[in-house]
Each structure stands twice: as structure tokens, then as C-alpha cells.
Image 1: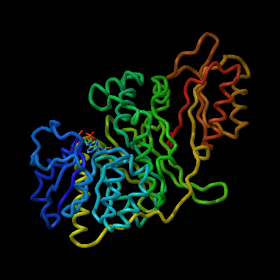
Image 2 (image 1 turned 180 degrees about the horizontal axis):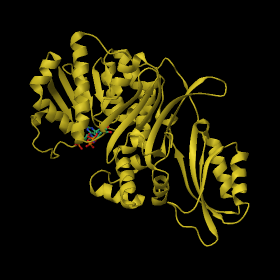
Image 3 (image 1 turned 180 degrees about the vertical axis):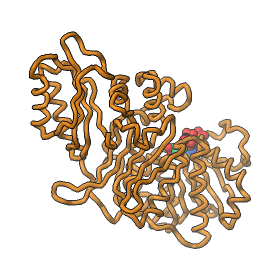
Image 4 (image 1 turned 30 degrees about the vertical axis):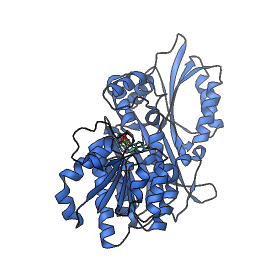
Length: 436
Ligand SMILES: NC(=O)c1ccc[n+]([C@@H]2O[C@H](COP(=O)([O-])OP(=O)(O)OC[C@H]3O[C@@H](n4cnc5c(N)ncnc54)[C@H](OP(=O)(O)O)[C@@H]3O)[C@@H](O)[C@H]2O)c1
């Protein structure tokens, strides 16, 4: 089985190492040896340590490598949309099998890849694109195909989980925790893709597509990052027995016309400490799946890093190689359900709202009236400065937790609260998930 490796950076180098270290076992498991036909990179002279591979295998001509007749499987660990998309479409149309870790490309234009795979008859596997080493996509696309998945809730970005875990443990603000994450190598020099939720949104799209047999792209995902989460928000969460996590949530629902829908969103949310995802600390990932018959399932492990990601890549290489030797291909994309993606405004959520209000009679009634006008039912009201910034003289802090309501109604409530004279400021607005 001849492999073309596109990219030899953090993940690619570990793929090369694992292929070398495990070559005998891999050959035995597949029924044929795996051989690297070539490695495409951008800079030939770059120092890649002492990789156990012949220098002559390196090339800057990725397309030429893909087109070679002696290449069976193309492994793409370059990243980005182009030229990766053109390369993989070319490889798949030519009947090669493709293994990729490229979540951005799958979320942006997975359709083009799936169509090219169907045309060429090869396999398209991408286990490493979501949650690194954690076996998650194979369970969704195979093991759970006899069941009906209702909801997928995940922590799928290690950088933001590290930052929020640090804020929870030390009381640090976002900027301070980001600095620590950068120093320790958990955040990139430009952390935008992680802290603004783009990376998690791409993964949410991939998970939702597989869980609900529906094409969901990055543009369908409501996305909010963690840059606005403050130390005061975390303190408020702690006062309620909760913590704050950046969650990716993909859920079935029913729209007002009675049609089945999906909603897919990424945003910070308070979850109770008793929730299984609350104890997922540092840069770890975890995904919680709720299915009709299987009930609740939790997948946990390292979501990134060269070796963990290479483990998932190699697992896919074994699977596609076996298929090629057997002359079969895995089931193609399953998008038959074609559920409509529901706008965020219709998603049902709960809110935790902290207000700094004038401390005088009638304030509570006025605030409650705003919630009532938007048909948002209040679950609890607490007064005091617990967890939040102490109010100014003559002010009081109100902490309100709502029942489930459409997100748009909750957002409109907050807008109106901000306009009230008696509301000095809305100090914290957070969605609440998981029964807090
Ligand atoms: N790192 C992780 O923990 C992780 C986890 C899960 C998924 N992934 C995904 O895995 C993929 C690779 O990530 P990575 O961290 O390994 O990236 P990386 O360290 O930046 O490596 C990228 C590799 O691609 C090569 N490359 C870039 N542009 C190229 C071009 N135009 N032609 C040929 N080669 C080119 C680079 O060549 P040079 O070496 O010559 O610069 C480098 O070898 C991405 O899709 C990423 O999202 C990464």
C-alpha cells in the first residue's frame, strides 16, 4: 500500500514516526506493508529532526505526487482550504483513498470531497479532524448507525478549555489565562481561530453532519468565542455551583410548523459541576452523545498534539488500506435526512443574567416585567453581590436565571433591560446548559 503524505509538520512528522515504529504490526493488521511513496512540503530545507525517512522522498510538488500511479492512499496534514481542496478532489476523483485531519476544509466544503469520493470510488476518512486522538467519528458513522442521536454536546477545543479551566482554578481574567496558555504552548501566536470559536464551529459542523445524517457546514453554525468571558462571569458561575465551558451543541428539534430540525451552535455556557463535561480540564476534549437506545455516552481524551492526532490518522490509514485490499469502500456520505438547520434565535436556551440595579422599591417588579413582556419565564432570582462585583452605594446586584426560552426572546429581554433607568449595568449574560 503506497502512501503520499501531504504535510510534514506537527502531525505529519508523528505520522512518519508511527509508520516507521509500527511498520511490522501495521503490515500484519492490514495484510500488506505500508510504504511512503513521497512527502510533500512547502520548504525542502526545513529541519525536521532525525525523521526515520529517506530525504529523497521529500518534494514540493504535491500535485505531481498525488497523480503518481503508484500512490494508493493520500494523507493530508497540511491544513487550510486551498490548495488542500484541489489536491484532495484530484486524488479522490482519480480513485485514491484520502485520510485527512483538515476540519476547516471538511466544514467549508465537505460536499466537494464527498462527491469526488463517490465519483472515484475511494474512501474519505477524517477521524483526526475532530477531537484528535478520540475515536468519535467512527462511532458516529458506524457504531451508532442503528440508533437515533438526539444531541451532541462537546468540548472540542483544547486551547479554550485550558484558558477557561485556568480562569476557574485561579480567578484569572481572560487575557492573563491566554498569556499562560501561549507561554505553555497551548495557544498559537495568533489564537483567533481558537478563542473566537472558529475551530470549534468547524468541528461542530462535522459532528452534526454525521450525527443527524444532514449536511451542516461551518456557515450553519452559530458561533461565539470566549474573549468576552470575564473573571466576574466565572465567579458568578461558581456561586451557582457551575463552571463555564466553550460548548459545541448540536441538537434535534422541531420547528413551529412541526418539522424536524437541527440547531448547531458554539458558545460559552455555564454547566453544573455535576455535569460530566465540567470535570474535563486543561487541554482535554470530551464529547457527550445522547441517543435514543444507547442513552448517554461520553468520549474523552487528548484532542490535539502531534502524536495523538497521528494515532487517529494511522487508524484511518489502516481502515482505508484494508478496504482497498478487499476491493471495497466504506459507506459513502449519509445525508439522507436533510434536516433544516434552525436559526440561533429559535434555539431553546436558558440564561443567567447579572444586573447592577438601583436599590429601591419596585425595581424587582420592573425587571420581572421585562422578562414577562418577552415571554421569558424566570426560574430563580437572587439578590446580593455573591460572586459578582460589589454594587455601588445605593445599588444592588440581581442574579436571574430563566427557564428555557427561544434565544431571540432572551436576547431581546437583555436589550430592553440595558435600556432601563433603574438598571445601572448588565454585568454578565451567559447561557446555561445541562440542568444547572
Ligand atoms: N497540530 C494538532 O494538534 C492538530 C490536531 C488535529 C488536527 N490538526 C490538523 O492537521 C493539519 C496539520 O496540522 P499541523 O499542526 O501538523 O500543521 P503544521 O505543523 O503547520 O504543518 C503543516 C505542514 O504542511 C506543509 N505545507 C503547508 N503549505 C504547503 C503547501 N502549499 N504545499 C506543500 N506543503 C505545505 C508544511 O510544510 P513545511 O514543513 O515545509 O512548512 C508543513 O509540513 C491541519 O489541518 C490541522 O488542523 C492538527
